[in-house]
Image 1 (cartoon, helix red, strand yellow):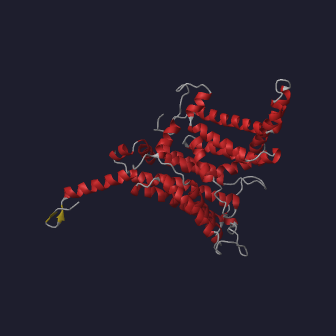
Image 2 (cartoon, one colour):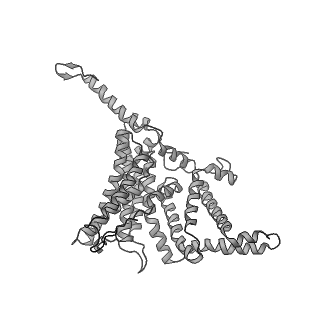
Image 3 (cartoon, rainbow, N blue to C red):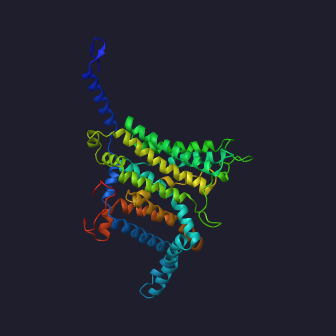
Length: 420
């Protein structure tokens, strides 16, 4: 657009028009394409608490059927079920009931099992929150894995590289480094979405890969590897940068769960009680209306992704500083992707995400004892988790199975202001 000049100065009306056009272009960039995150949030808002519980129950039932069909004893007893039904029920008890009992005992059967459940749940809660916060703004953050790795790498490096510091200084610095790493890895796709319209699903997937390859490269450096070793692992965290344990010797539960719960409380306040949370909700509901009301959609999108990155970065930091004690190539372990499942099961809310993280932590911890006692593969836990996602994503299927009429169960909002 040409600039008409009057005495060497720019016409104020023209300048205002150009500024308005630039703002409109930025807004269109944010709105390019259908928002996967907004559709994802709409699906969650249609899911009731009862439907969620029935989805978990359905997954457990189908898991039991899979166990039964995989058992030679159960299959053979079905051939003479009408003649000797007791044999079939005995086989079911040996191959299904005992497996689920071992799963429960491994999760909550004692102090050691509870410690493992909480330890496994800590990173899942934080990566789940990394998905739940952007969802409020209609964004789908698939980058939890990369943000988790970035936070763990930064926290871990500070944890072994800085020497001579006391615990009260070293540990907070390491945690802040994890926050910075996760925030950066979340901020990048947020800025790209706000300024260029690049879809957050694509950019976060790409950044996940960059984080994985970057971690492998860093772990190959002599400055990171332990002296005398060349495998992809870092030096051990110094005691001054290690999260304190919360239980007796031999139990791994540590202060990481406190960090996770504090983060959840802070994010709940941010989303439900703050002006910024209201803006996130407004943008998630209707970006055009929020923009017309004077809200900066670009800034809100960027902040939502950065805050999600902070949560995932804290997850990586807590894992390195509290559990692993060093950085390894298997640091992520798919926890960033599991966070998507946790946020889905938690229906996008902070409290629900914490509860879902504890449930999945229990499944992970219980699965190990289940495998040791019954010989059942840990793949059963993965199957149950996948079935939960399937049923949560298709609430109409659950309602059809249990003959629940639409609207018969009172729905609870995913988050304040979303509605159902």
